[in-house]
Image (cartoon, rainbow, N blue to C red):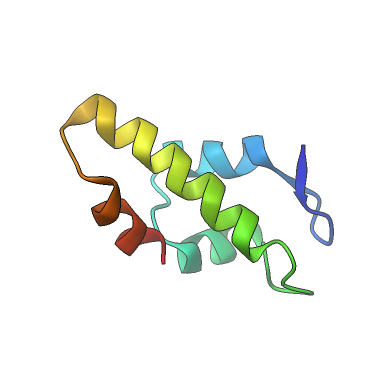
Length: 73
């Protein structure tokens, strides 16, 4: 699904970027240019990042969700 219509970025693009090491919103903006034009996708981008980071880190180690929220925000 398209998350950032201005830059044609999908949820898969965001998840792939997390898989490739993007862990902060600022880094995601730099990588995919999300939320750099109108900004209406900001909340959705952060939610997708948080979900993907939760999945990834829960597989690797026991990390609390609140710790992940601090990374994304």
